[in-house]
Amino acid sequence: MPKLTDTQTIILSRAATRPGNLALPLPEGLHGAAAKMAVNRMITNGWIEEVDANIRKGEPLWRETGDGHGTTLIATEAGLEAIGIEPVAASAVASARKAKPQKDAEPALTTEATDQPKPIAIRAGTKQAQIIALLQRPEGASIAEIVEATGWKAHTARGAISGALKKKLGLPITAAKAEGRGTVYRLEDG
Image 1 (cartoon, rainbow, N blue to C red):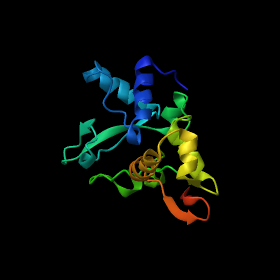
Image 2 (cartoon, one colour; image 1 turned 180 degrees about the vertical axis):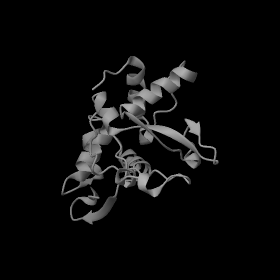
Image 3 (cartoon, rainbow, N blue to C red; image 1 turned 120 degrees about the horizontal axis):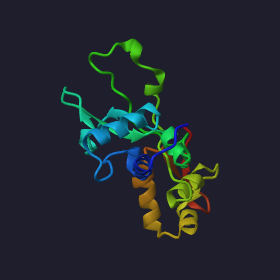
Image 4 (tube, rainbow, N blue to C red; image 1 turned 90 degrees about the horizontal axis):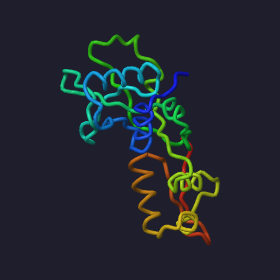
């Protein structure tokens, strides 16, 4: 595997911290031909990929496609692994992003890989990763258990479940009352 340059490492590290692993914006000072060359090399190595941008969510554009749409760049699982970040709960975390076929593209050129949801990398050791691990247990986790594990207040734990995990990451989290535990949250498979 080719060695990462400092610029490539910075791009991938920043992408790992952004929702949806967005690789844009690029580092300050990286413009024009240098940016295009760096991005093309990363795409060739499979570390980032060009996907349709969601303009409604305000995703930054890498380039315009000419049909009123644009593309953005996201870090791939291989790119995150190249900088030593292993996706936590990759099977449970899925993006709704799917590549839209181009008008002029032939259907035979599409692959099944583009129809699969894109896994989102969660940095290991973070409180978000701790919460996901608690929710993946067969018995799930109550707010009290999450508060104990993270040191957060109850309202912060509830906000993380509904905002960061359900809305932003799209995780299938269920809630049910349990005798003696209160509301128990679980991360359903699939």
